[in-house]
Image 1: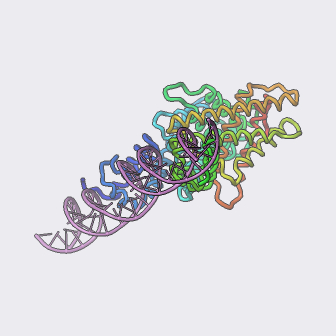
Image 2: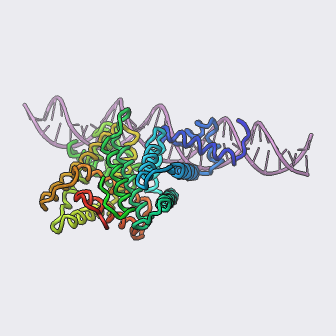
Image 3: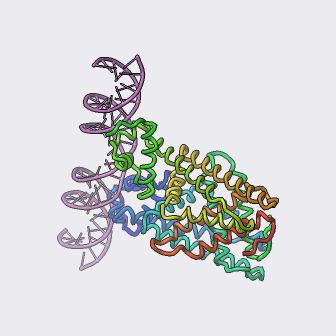
Length: 207
Length: 207
DNA sequence: GCGCAACCTTGTCAGGTGACAAAGTTGTCC
DNA sequence: GGACAACTTTGTCACCTGACAAGGTTGCGC
């Protein structure tokens, strides 16, 4: 095997773990399987990361960074305030439920984190990061339209994000391979956009 | 060991598995650990259920039945329509986030189900059962007040339940042992009640 | 009381897991 | 070119996993 510095091997291994786990689930992410994914001896994983949990930490951090990057990249072009929110949300939906399965992976890690204080801390940071980003984008959108939000951006962001999270869970639970996404779910997504915009404007959110 | 018919051993094992997994997580639910929990030889598990997955199926079905039972038992007493919905939702919140950890367990199974078609089918049934129950209760509440729901009960139920699910996820992700529940989460719960009632009445849902 | 089916236990298999020690290899700096 | 540190590999340990076969035990029906 080529002689690669650890600083380079780290991201390689994280990427390999991410690929493998995305494909086959977190449970399939044994140190052996990850090493094999990269074509490296198993002990290399331990040399590079020490313990398996340290690898997992790094993987979740990478996942977090990617996710927030995705959200930021979906900043909408034009339209009314409501339209822009809708556009943003649908872009987010597409990138979350797309076939790459990152959303599934994130849910699996969230489940793991419920029993593991170390992982939970990272997930907490992820959650706060996402909420901050959402609140910030919401404020920017409102500013661009000369609107004053009818309640704190953070509260609206939490309302939206929890609803969105519940929707992706529902989607993942009900989806059948090869089938169209459940129309109820998409309907509920529009409803969520409507209530969210309603909270922004302090006005009725009639769909 | 006492000579117990399989029809009796089954629920005993399911209960033992439920206790163990609630306490230590789904991952700790090996056939050996479950057998030990009941004080029985490991092979008894295989004799009774055949395969481990069959045990898991039975556990999830039990969990499902309990959950829907809880929801039905929370039918509120009196008050205005909005108050009754609020009462119901808060009772549901208490029983979901209570210390027994069934909510955590359910999330863990949901995560497992994302990669396992057999489990997924059960979770799908659970989801539909809950949504049906919620829609039914909502209709009954509206009827009792002589109200006409402004949109299909099912759609409102999906809106509420996805939001609720997202909130429990957020709660589980952010909670720190021994700390008060995050005030933002409770605020968001009230907000969810408000938007849900708003959808029922077809009117603005100003908190 | 005898037989048979249902139930229980012991013992074991094959495979997978994280972790590490020891020894080999590479590359860089003097 | 020699020394030393960084990296890699092989090999192995102790443990846990689901599954099952063989044989012992219980209790019900006749």
